[in-house]
Length: 121
Length: 176
Image (tube, rainbow over all chains, first blue to last red; front, side):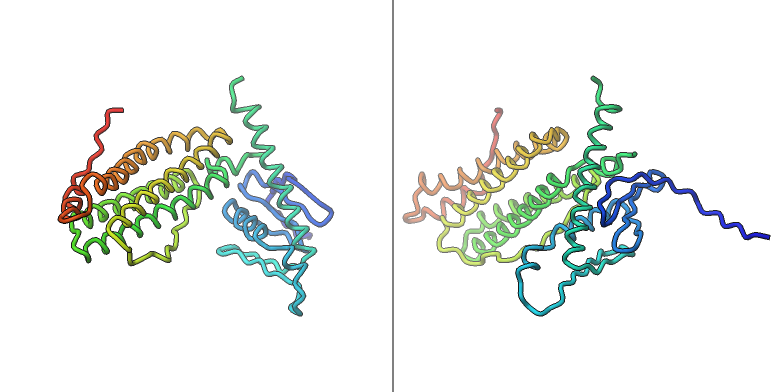
Protein backbone atom coordinates (compact mmCIF):
# COMPACT_ATOMS: atom_id res chain seq x y z
CA UNK A 1 0.00 0.00 0.00
CA UNK A 2 1.16 3.45 -0.75
CA UNK A 3 1.77 5.96 2.00
CA UNK A 4 -0.22 9.02 1.38
CA UNK A 5 1.10 12.27 2.81
CA UNK A 6 -1.42 15.05 2.93
CA UNK A 7 0.09 18.47 3.00
CA UNK A 8 -1.98 21.39 4.17
CA UNK A 9 -2.98 23.43 1.19
CA UNK A 10 -1.47 26.87 1.29
CA UNK A 11 -2.45 29.43 -1.25
CA UNK A 12 0.36 31.66 -2.27
CA UNK A 13 0.07 34.82 -4.30
CA UNK A 14 3.26 36.02 -5.83
CA UNK A 15 3.92 39.59 -4.78
CA UNK A 16 7.17 40.22 -6.62
CA UNK A 17 10.00 38.30 -8.16
CA UNK A 18 13.41 38.88 -9.64
CA UNK A 19 15.72 36.30 -11.18
CA UNK A 20 17.34 35.93 -7.73
CA UNK A 21 14.25 35.20 -5.70
CA UNK A 22 10.58 35.82 -5.02
CA UNK A 23 8.20 36.86 -2.28
CA UNK A 24 4.77 35.31 -1.88
CA UNK A 25 1.86 36.31 0.28
CA UNK A 26 -0.38 33.83 2.05
CA UNK A 27 -3.80 35.34 2.73
CA UNK A 28 -4.90 32.43 4.90
CA UNK A 29 -1.90 32.77 7.21
CA UNK A 30 -1.53 36.55 7.00
CA UNK A 31 2.14 36.24 6.25
CA UNK A 32 4.77 36.26 3.53
CA UNK A 33 7.15 33.60 2.24
CA UNK A 34 10.51 34.69 0.99
CA UNK A 35 12.21 32.43 -1.49
CA UNK A 36 15.79 33.62 -1.43
CA UNK A 37 19.34 32.35 -0.97
CA UNK A 38 18.25 28.74 -1.34
CA UNK A 39 15.51 28.65 1.27
CA UNK A 40 11.87 29.44 1.73
CA UNK A 41 11.31 31.41 4.92
CA UNK A 42 8.09 32.54 6.54
CA UNK A 43 7.79 36.12 7.78
CA UNK A 44 4.87 37.64 9.63
CA UNK A 45 4.05 41.37 9.55
CA UNK A 46 6.44 42.44 12.33
CA UNK A 47 9.31 40.32 11.08
CA UNK A 48 8.92 41.46 7.50
CA UNK A 49 9.18 45.07 8.64
CA UNK A 50 12.20 44.21 10.78
CA UNK A 51 13.84 42.50 7.81
CA UNK A 52 13.15 45.53 5.62
CA UNK A 53 14.70 47.83 8.22
CA UNK A 54 17.74 45.58 8.66
CA UNK A 55 18.40 45.31 4.93
CA UNK A 56 17.77 48.99 4.15
CA UNK A 57 20.17 50.01 6.92
CA UNK A 58 23.14 48.25 5.39
CA UNK A 59 25.51 50.79 3.88
CA UNK A 60 26.23 49.07 0.56
CA UNK A 61 28.47 51.86 -0.72
CA UNK A 62 30.65 51.55 2.35
CA UNK A 63 30.89 47.77 1.91
CA UNK A 64 31.99 48.20 -1.70
CA UNK A 65 34.55 50.90 -0.96
CA UNK A 66 36.24 49.62 2.15
CA UNK A 67 39.47 47.82 1.46
CA UNK A 68 39.90 45.90 4.69
CA UNK A 69 40.59 42.22 4.44
CA UNK A 70 37.40 41.26 6.26
CA UNK A 71 35.20 38.92 4.22
CA UNK A 72 32.43 40.62 2.28
CA UNK A 73 29.71 38.95 4.26
CA UNK A 74 26.85 40.44 6.16
CA UNK A 75 24.80 38.56 8.73
CA UNK A 76 21.18 39.57 8.86
CA UNK A 77 19.75 38.42 12.13
CA UNK A 78 16.29 39.44 13.21
CA UNK A 79 15.25 39.36 16.83
CA UNK A 80 12.48 36.85 17.61
CA UNK A 81 12.59 35.47 14.08
CA UNK A 82 13.60 31.92 13.18
CA UNK A 83 15.58 32.89 10.14
CA UNK A 84 18.94 34.39 9.61
CA UNK A 85 20.71 35.28 6.38
CA UNK A 86 24.41 35.26 5.73
CA UNK A 87 24.81 37.17 2.50
CA UNK A 88 27.48 38.46 0.18
CA UNK A 89 27.34 42.00 -1.15
CA UNK A 90 25.73 40.87 -4.40
CA UNK A 91 23.11 38.94 -2.47
CA UNK A 92 22.39 41.95 -0.25
CA UNK A 93 21.81 44.09 -3.32
CA UNK A 94 19.55 41.40 -4.77
CA UNK A 95 17.57 41.05 -1.52
CA UNK A 96 17.18 44.80 -1.25
CA UNK A 97 15.87 44.96 -4.81
CA UNK A 98 13.46 42.15 -4.04
CA UNK A 99 12.17 43.89 -0.90
CA UNK A 100 11.86 47.27 -2.60
CA UNK A 101 9.81 45.74 -5.39
CA UNK A 102 7.68 43.89 -2.88
CA UNK A 103 6.84 47.00 -0.86
CA UNK A 104 5.95 48.89 -4.01
CA UNK A 105 3.59 46.08 -5.02
CA UNK A 106 2.06 45.95 -1.52
CA UNK A 107 1.51 49.71 -1.68
CA UNK A 108 -0.08 49.31 -5.10
CA UNK A 109 -2.32 46.57 -3.73
CA UNK A 110 -3.33 48.96 -0.94
CA UNK A 111 -4.22 51.68 -3.46
CA UNK A 112 -6.23 49.23 -5.57
CA UNK A 113 -8.09 48.03 -2.46
CA UNK A 114 -8.92 51.61 -1.55
CA UNK A 115 -10.18 52.42 -5.03
CA UNK A 116 -12.17 49.25 -5.60
CA UNK A 117 -13.60 48.44 -2.21
CA UNK A 118 -13.17 51.22 0.30
CA UNK A 119 -13.70 54.60 -1.24
CA UNK A 120 -17.21 55.65 -2.16
CA UNK A 121 -16.89 57.33 -5.51
CA UNK B 1 -4.59 39.49 -2.28
CA UNK B 2 -5.31 40.86 1.18
CA UNK B 3 -4.07 44.28 2.22
CA UNK B 4 -2.33 42.89 5.33
CA UNK B 5 -0.13 45.87 6.11
CA UNK B 6 -3.05 48.30 6.27
CA UNK B 7 -5.00 45.84 8.40
CA UNK B 8 -2.14 45.71 10.91
CA UNK B 9 -1.32 49.40 11.19
CA UNK B 10 -2.97 52.71 10.48
CA UNK B 11 0.26 54.70 10.36
CA UNK B 12 2.62 54.87 7.41
CA UNK B 13 6.20 53.99 8.30
CA UNK B 14 7.26 57.60 7.71
CA UNK B 15 4.71 59.04 10.13
CA UNK B 16 5.54 56.33 12.65
CA UNK B 17 9.24 57.24 12.47
CA UNK B 18 8.47 60.94 12.88
CA UNK B 19 6.30 60.30 15.93
CA UNK B 20 8.99 58.10 17.44
CA UNK B 21 11.45 60.96 16.97
CA UNK B 22 8.96 63.26 18.65
CA UNK B 23 8.75 60.86 21.60
CA UNK B 24 12.49 61.19 21.99
CA UNK B 25 12.23 64.96 21.76
CA UNK B 26 9.57 65.12 24.47
CA UNK B 27 11.61 62.82 26.71
CA UNK B 28 14.66 64.99 26.15
CA UNK B 29 12.60 68.08 26.96
CA UNK B 30 11.36 66.51 30.16
CA UNK B 31 14.91 65.65 31.22
CA UNK B 32 16.11 69.19 30.49
CA UNK B 33 13.31 70.68 32.61
CA UNK B 34 14.27 68.37 35.43
CA UNK B 35 17.83 69.59 35.18
CA UNK B 36 16.61 73.21 35.21
CA UNK B 37 14.54 72.46 38.32
CA UNK B 38 17.66 71.15 39.99
CA UNK B 39 19.71 74.24 39.05
CA UNK B 40 17.01 76.65 40.26
CA UNK B 41 16.64 74.78 43.53
CA UNK B 42 20.39 74.76 44.15
CA UNK B 43 20.58 78.49 43.55
CA UNK B 44 17.69 79.48 45.79
CA UNK B 45 14.96 79.98 43.17
CA UNK B 46 12.43 77.64 44.73
CA UNK B 47 9.32 78.85 42.91
CA UNK B 48 11.03 78.49 39.55
CA UNK B 49 12.24 75.07 40.59
CA UNK B 50 8.63 74.00 41.25
CA UNK B 51 7.61 75.51 37.91
CA UNK B 52 10.21 73.40 36.07
CA UNK B 53 9.26 70.25 37.98
CA UNK B 54 5.71 70.75 36.71
CA UNK B 55 6.96 71.37 33.16
CA UNK B 56 9.01 68.15 33.33
CA UNK B 57 5.85 66.24 34.31
CA UNK B 58 3.92 67.78 31.42
CA UNK B 59 6.55 66.86 28.84
CA UNK B 60 6.57 63.33 30.19
CA UNK B 61 2.81 63.23 29.79
CA UNK B 62 3.13 64.43 26.16
CA UNK B 63 5.69 61.72 25.53
CA UNK B 64 3.31 59.04 26.82
CA UNK B 65 0.45 60.43 24.74
CA UNK B 66 2.49 60.00 21.55
CA UNK B 67 3.72 56.63 22.75
CA UNK B 68 0.26 55.25 23.34
CA UNK B 69 -1.04 56.68 20.09
CA UNK B 70 1.54 54.70 18.08
CA UNK B 71 0.66 51.52 19.97
CA UNK B 72 -3.09 52.08 19.62
CA UNK B 73 -2.68 52.47 15.87
CA UNK B 74 -0.77 49.19 15.58
CA UNK B 75 2.73 50.61 15.30
CA UNK B 76 5.95 50.06 17.22
CA UNK B 77 6.62 52.67 19.90
CA UNK B 78 10.29 52.97 20.79
CA UNK B 79 11.46 53.89 24.28
CA UNK B 80 14.18 56.50 23.77
CA UNK B 81 17.56 56.78 25.44
CA UNK B 82 18.37 60.26 26.66
CA UNK B 83 21.92 61.46 27.17
CA UNK B 84 23.88 64.71 27.34
CA UNK B 85 21.70 66.68 29.71
CA UNK B 86 23.37 69.87 30.81
CA UNK B 87 23.76 70.40 34.56
CA UNK B 88 25.03 73.96 34.91
CA UNK B 89 23.65 77.25 33.61
CA UNK B 90 25.40 80.62 33.52
CA UNK B 91 22.53 82.70 34.83
CA UNK B 92 18.94 82.64 36.03
CA UNK B 93 17.87 84.34 32.81
CA UNK B 94 19.70 81.80 30.64
CA UNK B 95 17.58 79.02 32.11
CA UNK B 96 14.40 80.69 30.88
CA UNK B 97 15.88 81.56 27.51
CA UNK B 98 16.68 77.91 26.96
CA UNK B 99 13.23 76.87 28.17
CA UNK B 100 11.65 79.05 25.47
CA UNK B 101 14.02 77.67 22.81
CA UNK B 102 13.00 74.21 23.88
CA UNK B 103 9.29 74.92 23.49
CA UNK B 104 9.79 76.55 20.09
CA UNK B 105 11.71 73.55 18.90
CA UNK B 106 8.90 71.21 20.04
CA UNK B 107 6.26 73.31 18.24
CA UNK B 108 8.26 73.38 15.01
CA UNK B 109 8.81 69.65 15.16
CA UNK B 110 5.08 68.91 15.60
CA UNK B 111 4.32 71.27 12.70
CA UNK B 112 6.66 69.18 10.59
CA UNK B 113 4.76 65.98 11.47
CA UNK B 114 1.50 67.70 10.55
CA UNK B 115 2.95 68.74 7.18
CA UNK B 116 3.84 65.11 6.48
CA UNK B 117 0.32 64.00 7.50
CA UNK B 118 -1.21 66.53 5.08
CA UNK B 119 0.93 65.17 2.31
CA UNK B 120 -0.18 61.60 3.02
CA UNK B 121 -3.77 62.59 3.77
CA UNK B 122 -3.41 61.06 7.22
CA UNK B 123 -6.30 63.02 8.74
CA UNK B 124 -6.51 60.70 11.72
CA UNK B 125 -3.05 61.64 13.00
CA UNK B 126 -3.67 65.25 12.06
CA UNK B 127 -6.69 65.34 14.33
CA UNK B 128 -4.63 63.73 17.10
CA UNK B 129 -1.98 66.43 16.69
CA UNK B 130 -4.50 69.25 17.17
CA UNK B 131 -4.44 68.68 20.91
CA UNK B 132 -0.68 69.28 20.91
CA UNK B 133 -0.99 72.50 18.94
CA UNK B 134 -3.34 73.92 21.58
CA UNK B 135 -0.94 72.75 24.26
CA UNK B 136 2.05 74.37 22.54
CA UNK B 137 0.23 77.72 22.44
CA UNK B 138 0.07 77.58 26.20
CA UNK B 139 3.65 76.32 26.64
CA UNK B 140 5.14 79.00 24.42
CA UNK B 141 3.04 81.69 26.07
CA UNK B 142 4.25 80.65 29.53
CA UNK B 143 7.90 80.49 28.51
CA UNK B 144 7.70 83.87 26.78
CA UNK B 145 5.91 85.46 29.73
CA UNK B 146 8.59 84.21 32.13
CA UNK B 147 11.27 85.90 30.04
CA UNK B 148 9.20 89.09 29.94
CA UNK B 149 9.35 89.22 33.72
CA UNK B 150 13.10 89.73 33.49
CA UNK B 151 12.49 92.87 31.43
CA UNK B 152 9.58 94.36 33.33
CA UNK B 153 10.85 93.63 36.84
CA UNK B 154 14.57 93.92 36.14
CA UNK B 155 17.30 91.85 37.75
CA UNK B 156 18.75 94.59 39.94
CA UNK B 157 18.38 94.61 43.73
CA UNK B 158 15.74 92.13 44.79
CA UNK B 159 14.65 91.76 41.17
CA UNK B 160 15.50 88.07 40.81
CA UNK B 161 13.66 87.29 44.03
CA UNK B 162 10.59 89.07 42.64
CA UNK B 163 10.89 87.29 39.29
CA UNK B 164 11.13 83.93 41.02
CA UNK B 165 8.00 84.68 43.03
CA UNK B 166 6.03 85.61 39.91
CA UNK B 167 7.15 82.69 37.75
CA UNK B 168 5.03 80.35 39.84
CA UNK B 169 1.94 82.44 39.14
CA UNK B 170 2.10 82.45 35.34
CA UNK B 171 -1.15 81.19 33.85
CA UNK B 172 -2.51 81.02 30.35
CA UNK B 173 -6.17 81.89 30.34
CA UNK B 174 -6.95 82.76 26.77
CA UNK B 175 -10.43 82.50 25.36
CA UNK B 176 -9.08 82.49 21.82
